[in-house]
Length: 484
Image 1 (cartoon, helix red, strand yellow):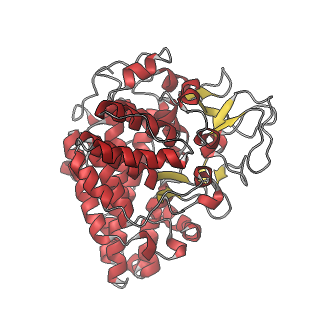
Image 2 (cartoon, rainbow, N blue to C red; image 1 turned 90 degrees about the vertical axis):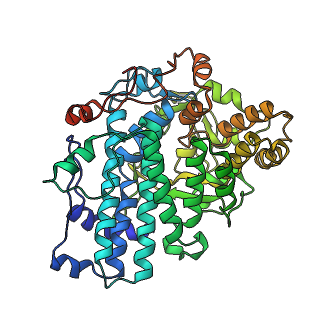
Image 3 (tube, one colour; image 1 turned 135 degrees about the vertical axis):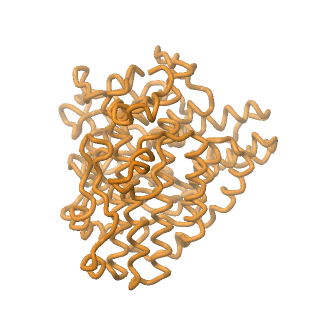
């Protein structure tokens, strides 16, 4: 997969030039010429169109600063960090929950995911035209595109609520397609669209074990089932969570939690779906992911944003090995021998974003873990508990705790186990871009933020605002979320 990134840039420039601030200003490839068909009408050409979708996840506006601000700094797991006077454009207001519809993180996350969805629709339009490519390969590639589109729509719906569903390449001269792009649909409609895409992906994708080593970063059937279980979780479809989690097979918890987030742990037995970094030229790493979160100041190597909060530190039980695998503490020595001096500006940093080989490089080699088997175990545990199968849920919860070198949970009742599972998700998955959304979906947000002296306004902060630039362009076809 990493080798494929080398060849993608010519294609990216050819077909996928980036968006301007205009939401609709996305290059459309409604059809391709006979010459272009001949150029890409083979297995490699067909593959390249879908690799271009994965390539979008390497962009700064997709996976780095704005997404970190929205999904992590805005949660109770993290503080803005950095120097007090460095706002990071809007990371101070993300941290304080005082952002608005014009905040950079709000706009870039929205635009980046629609840029990715455009690439999905490009691939879904063009790959079927490449009739000289292997039919089985084309089917798989279309499954990958459907999975990635579902992944991006899941990001959008849990972030903004209902959003426009763009299910095909819009014709720039079609007023109907213009309305489609600018009219938000309900959350229920978006979730139904995601589920349909994932059903198509499941039918077309192979198991992880069926991929060649060079393609290990591509979406698999297990990834589609895991994402579908997570989509079910957010809708409280408890039995479907269990059913789909049971279909995520061929994965296991790795013995050493810390290894998951190191180079040796990339695409390990626990990994279901992760974004592949390279950190080298001409292949492209993930732009700014590690350096924006690296230790700042004398003896540091980064910008210092997204620092672990004191309440996250306090959430770990004594002896939990996950704490030192998640948090870099000033004054300690890391696994690779790097000394973190006490002269850095912040007392704590995100260890899961740390790159040993490319500590201060703009393009990092650190992968981003988005779906792993531990979360599947916890999702199933939560669903079983809600289905009044609490003893079975406890067994799964203890698998996660025991891997962290903790004893079995003391929770017994359904309510106690529910709270224990929520707490376990926090310490198991800290800095994996889930905490804010977990607080919202479980109804814990008001009390969790109050501990930090922050006001989470019920009825408002469950969703982020739609970007003001999009609303202006929609000209009344879409309305803002409540409270903004």
